[in-house]
Amino acid sequence: MTRPAENSSAPYACDPAKTRGRRLSEAESPTRTAFQRDRDRIVHSGAFRKLQYKTQVFVYHEGDYYRTRLTHSLEVAQIARSISRQLGLNEDLAEAVALAHDLGHTPFGHAGEDALDGAMQAYGGFDHNEQTFRILTELEARYAEFDGLNLTWETLEGAVKHNGPLTDPRPHLATFCDHWDLELDGWPSAEAQVAALADDIAYNNHDIDDGLRAGLFTVEDLSALPLVGPVLEEVQDRYPRLELPRWIHETIRRLINLMVEDLLGETRRRLAEQAPSTVDDIRKAGRAVVAFSETMRENDRVLRDFLFTRMYRHYLVNRQTLKARRVVSELFQLYMDQPNTLPAEWRQRAETADSARLRARVVADYIAGMTDRYALEAHRKVFDPYARF
Image (cartoon, rainbow, N blue to C red; front, side, top):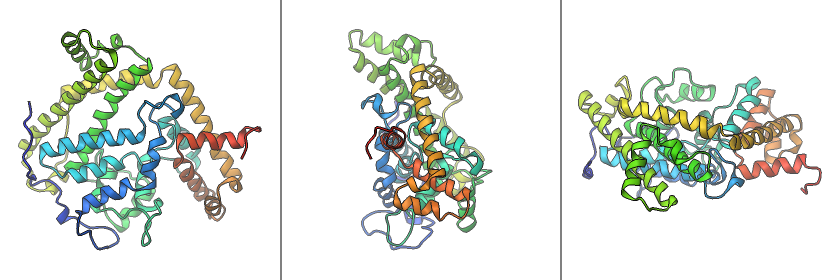
């Protein structure tokens, strides 16, 4: 069992007192560190609040129990903080990256993104990671002195590179880096790496939870999986009369603990092997320092394959996916052809755009910012002849 870490920072942790600063200089808070302030700006953003009504697999009217992008982001942040504390990393930075990672997602989960990307193919495509970066640096309009959130270099680096180096950045990010280099060819901080794997841990395990409760697969279906099966058996042996909801929760809790313990063990092994003494040593390591063991990576791959086949391609999910794609595609075409159907502010942006490509980007920004519920209602008001405006 891993012992709780002491309250000390590792030499390779990001130090908010040594931040590379913000793109636009501003006085720092006397009561919060730079990374705490970044986290707070993300939490108070409009894009973050909208995650409450954006789903991952199910559209919102399938039930109010299933996880949304907001609950998922909070769970990722909690796991990231716990791991960071064990490794002596900066918990606030890991939390900020975790809370920001889903801001650019469209309504209706991956189905919505696929539809919007398809509609945008002639205009440069759509990618939720780039959209997250645009929200953080441009689209969020709350502050008097700047667009975006004016986050620190370290938080922006983590947001764009949490999955590793970027060799072919999309246009907005590439242009931004011409003016403020985020060193896209290197690895991100250990805190950002923690946030990325915390996302994997939360995503897979909570999809198991949602899938079981929705009846998309059964406990027996899971029993053959190398990671899940032994835990199912262990819980059954210890709690043979436990009711199903508690039994599911106990299983998910143990699975998360197993993955966290594995990550800590493999990461400590790599840290001992590489002996980094600064955060730049982490960035120049040539590979991820925060990682699962080879066995856990294979188990995770098997679980992902199972969820893809049995959950994401389940016929009930496919039906909702078809609806979601239709809603997004038809709204996009409508707003491109008839920008006068957009709300006043967005209409002005679309009608004054210098090219079809720029107009399409305005339309995509508007649709991407919708919640599931808002998108369904917007579509109904326009395409249902009996709907009231």
